[in-house]
Image 1 (cartoon, rainbow, N blue to C red):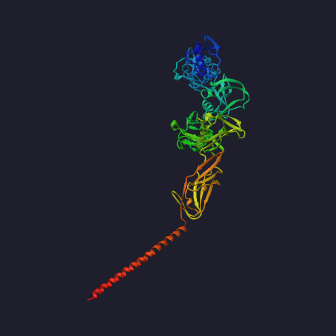
Image 2 (image 1 turned 90 degrees about the vertical axis):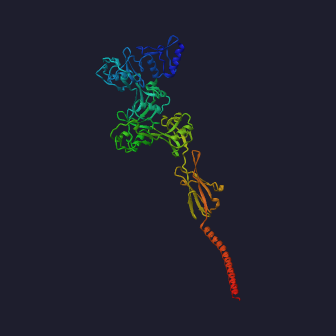
Image 3 (image 1 turned 90 degrees about the horizontal axis):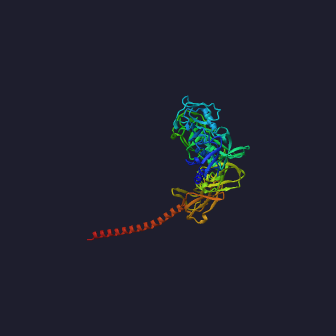
Length: 616
């Protein structure tokens, strides 16, 4: 029994879950009933007080209560909430010799308020089921301390599907502009106190708060130490990611200035997306309603992205439509719900607008948007990023990827900035999520991150112009006349100040591979008295120094052909004509002489024939 008990305790400490047959190992003593008191565990046949070897969360308390067949919150022996998402929500059951479900229609708003107060939770935020004149009904006036103190009449049995589902608030944001912004408070042991997290509070924690409050998308959240000293509830930040805030309370602090400030969007949200700045668009209209495809134009998307603290919209699936409900935004509004809208229609989730806003991330102080100091927009202002943990090349690659700046060249931490507010981010988190999602509290620091991405330099352009003579542009290159002057121009689109250009020609002597500084983003290489040594392929290389690193970008090659000048051509023609004359004249003379001899021979032959004919 002792070994079995130790194994059960070890499992309980590590998982918060007890075996189904372990109820005989636990009891509560010294309280007003069997469901209240000090936890004792039976080991070796003896009852001993339990001492936690780690943080004791409300989840652990719930496990003890559940195994003792008491309520999961404060071990009330008369009511409980089961199968809910947290300690303050679920199907309502009361003890009547056995646990019996409260049927749909048997509990009104006053009864729900009494029940939530009895369980140590806040006011009811959702009650599925209302007052009914039939069957068993709890007749509460609202001031009672327990639901079973309320008069009740009738009795009936209902299936679990017809049982009242109740959600009591256990969390709130106070001091903000709306119920969805302010300092996080949780109600525990009947008292509302600020939350002081143990561990790193990041945007995943903030998203959990916004989700539990049904408050739309996360804008920002951070831990701060600027509150007057007062009692707080300590909660585990890691636990909050998986469980309710109230279930993660493990300690109380007599006095602390710490608090968590959270701001959620109370009117719009993006759901089922890859991050905080993408997803299906929904707005609050008494309930969360999808924005139908065609009901949001570019101006509306810009307003929505800005409202969510994201960058400009980079993808909008759906455009302006003259039919149905349409948001008529001009683009300057601070919130989507500030835009006039007309019509109303219901659309399926597959017909809901899908929006992707760019991440609120930038590289500042560099010569281009793909190099500089990493900054993230947090709480409405741009702040440097200070990494928690070892920042490696994989983290740098994530930043370059989010900025659509190619692959990572290098990233390093520096400590020579002026002292200012920075945003702490988890380096491990950045590998899996966006930088904004990994942001946590702000602090003052002189440290920051410098990042350089590969998509740094534009490709230079190469061209040839001729100052004397003529040139002929051909598909495969440029033809330049021999003896003329020509100029190779290397240029690049305005992107960085400074830099230099190097002109390379593989077929030219090394002395012709020269470098000139970039002036107004270009350089001119002059050549005179063109001869056969100048023909071949020419290439411009743009060189730049950024953050003690050298970068280069190479132009396509341009082939230079050689042609003759006009004077050379005339001389060549004259020479050829002279040569032709020198060839033709002797031939003509010879021909004439041959013809003359032939003619003399013919005449002599004719004379002889005449003489012969005349002789007797």
